[in-house]
Length: 359
Image 1 (cartoon, rainbow, N blue to C red):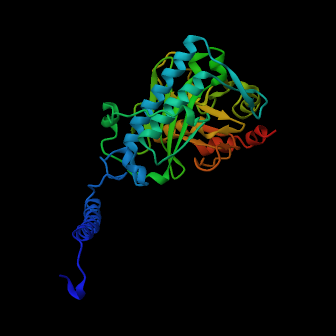
Image 2 (cartoon, rainbow, N blue to C red):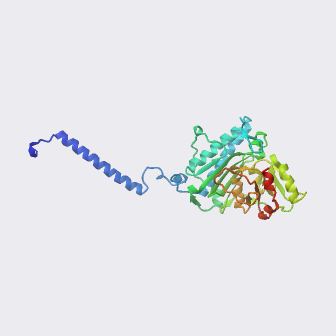
Image 3 (tube, rainbow, N blue to C red):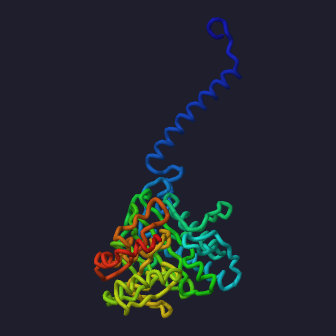
């Protein structure tokens, strides 16, 4: 008999005990979860194996790993570019007009290369900013996994990891450089490119030529698989310029360097940068300077800028200013690229070229 003459129901006692046990279970399991989380044993995102995906919480990324994935992305994109071109079904479209009035073309090669390159990099490094020339359609999303293998040639040159804050990184992708030439079946000009900038400064670049399967890469203060040529002609240089406005540059170049100056019209910014280097590709022309006098997009030039910088060269606006790879996706001031030359002396020789480019 309970106190005060109240009789306890066995069923009520059982329910009360079960409720008490439930409260104790939740309190204890919460305590254990906190302990496991503290020691990194929990199952929440960010608690898994170390690697590029661990940067999803905004931590750090390894530039050596980013270089490996960038090379793979450029090659995978190049495979799509080559496959579409060899099928001869390009599905060519116009995105509008460039500032110079030319058709800004897009093909299936651009779209499919972009998809492979973007999602490979995004899956490996989900927390970094990626800027790409072509629109990324969420309906076409792919999960393209990286096997975490770093090629031997990269390990040989970049012997230790290089960690940087993920939030400081911006990736620039050009899934098909020289689309106009691609549609004309001028294959030697076509490249795929990836660049990684840290705090706006180009740190690593990859330029891949899909039709010769040659890939150049370099990391600033790291290493490279490409080098400068042994000599350059600074007095009467061979100047590589865009096919679309070679006459504009030729007039000023002849005034600046004399009548012996050679102008090489070419397609694609990646091809033009490689023209300054020692590239084992018979289809690659050789030049001493690269000059561009009109507006240009950063995904066209970032990879080349990083490679030149890693090799001791320079790429600046025509007025000699360094190019920042944050913010807007283009630059107005044209560009001048050189290696193993007095770059600032070259800038001073071209006082009117920037004005010409803005006409």
